[in-house]
Image (tube, rainbow, N blue to C red):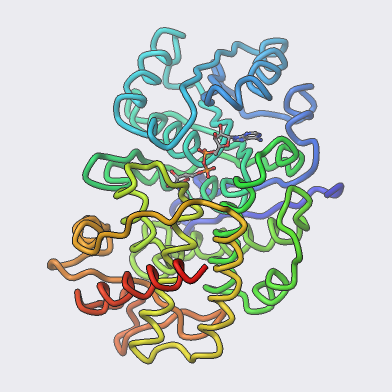
Length: 375
Ligand code: NAD
Ligand code: GLY
């Protein structure tokens, strides 16, 4: 992608200063390293990253920034199992040790784990400092770096502690995908598929036609997914209703992820979650069988390519985790479900959160187990 794409995330007029831009272009990270891309005014920049991304890009960015401004770097061990309050504490302690003050800016350099955790720390450090997102996984480039949801996991469930804290800017360099392991591309494709099912039928059919999913994935998918996410977040930042559509596949998906003790990758859990939740939409007569089958075909392909082992799917454990989901209300599990590919269902009063009975939830897990064991 050689031309620079700019997408704006805008909030209502009283809050215009929180609006920001997503910039997408090959080599934008090099521009930041070389100091040719202007950064906001700050007393210092602290890069927060994980050990893998640090080796690939972190030290280079630190060196580049140090040439022009005061800069520091904090790295933590990679992986979802480290997206927790203990790591957040360690990162905050490092910020303090590096002398970060209220006019310092945090740079989240990495995948969704780094983005969520660094954003969370930025939102509470000295009651909140600014941060920038430089997402380096496909999943983070199409989803998690946009919209300001931050947080960490807890033993009782996914993202149980968190805040809304919008970044000041998002810099996406698709060339960072060249170093990403192939299965991590599949995790990102899962969130692109979600985005398409939720809001873009045309993108879904283009995605279904791809014969391979690798780091050469056409850049138009990144751009379209970012545009959709930016539009939804601009309309409903705090998830009063519409934003919840981005949670499709996540009620069951997060439950599977939590019950695996965060060993299964988020994107793959969302793939499995969408398989279960589309069955729920079909069974509740919200979704037509043809659109169910189209989804199923793409999602099963993603699951097969990932060659993950069939996870243990215990209905009681999964339901217990589903009850900790943030959409749960009065002990009723609620989900965001598709009406057709490209459109989500709303209840008669316009709510995108649809109550789902325990019986149907259980049925979807039985269905998923059967569908996956059939290959
Ligand atoms: P991740 O951050 O763990 O990254 C996956 C792996 O890739 C890690 O091992 C990382 O070190 C490595 N990596 C990152 N960039 C690399 C690169 N360019 N080259 C080589 N290796 C690289 O996982 P993820 O899939 O990016 O993110 C998943 C997380 O995102 C989950 O915690 C999920 O809850 C969160 N999420 C948040 C939102 C949101 O709106 N805030 C939305 C979706 C997902
Ligand atoms: N679950 C993705 C989002 O709302 O940002």
